[in-house]
Image (cartoon, rainbow, N blue to C red; front, side, top):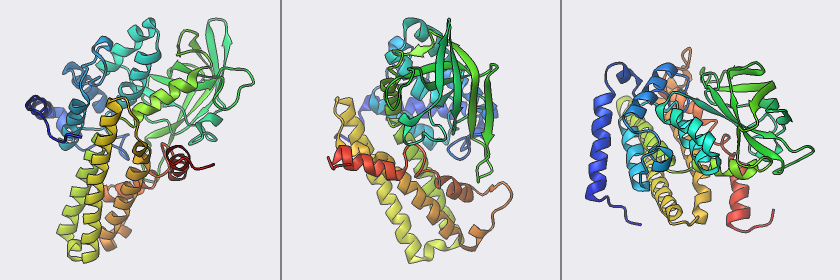
Length: 387
């Protein structure tokens, strides 16, 4: 794998850096460093306005094909953009679910009418999407989902419950996995439905986290409807669609996430220097270990993405979620040790960045597939071990 960048790629980096420097000003300047994981409910309306600013600048749909209205950027260009975006401390993306997950899925499986209706508003940042996958009894085991949709004339009628739905409170649309096959179970009889949130029969209940934030919500569907032509992919064939969507969840955006991790680690190192914790050899060793593991994480991700770009899927790809979730949890724990006695002082709202970091990283080893599930997948699918 060639780790160097060409002259053209460095020009692209400068273009990204210059644009961000010129636009993260004025009202947008206060959004720097806000709206990321653990802080997604901060400045939501302002971040939606920022999505629209990105859209006007041609920075949404970077990885989308030009036929879909995107920029058709190479993998290297995507990595450069995400790393520069994180280095500039630009705000967490309010439109990530639509741009990163739903858009590529509609481009791959949607009808011409669906592409014409839904892709352009995502690129413009004028419609925000949420993802209706997880349920109270179907998290890591997504195939256990029980939300149902029954056809009634020209509509699907949806009943069920979703949970951990990011930014459901401000989303206009949700793509919902529901059982459309009567008597179906597990991976069969599931469809992917595009459902408007602002309608009778949809109730959103924010979930207050121990950080004090409410980034997620429970979503209750009680007779909600959507037109029959709002199914992405074949009816009862939604499992394949869902797996395609989840593949994008762990694509090039993981490099942007790791750039955010770098920002957090640097901030922690500075706190350790300021309060004297860096004089402790044990703290220094742990900081150095986290730095090395972060470098390994980045190189592994680049190798995996490069292989994927060649049409290959190396076994190492399966360690990604387990690796970064464990790393981030360890960073949160070290943050408390760096704070020392101050770690016990949790102010109202947990407004210290390191406290919020620690509390958030409790969830990293659970969401998007628990560590235990990830180990099972590695054992069975990568190593060929029996169940």
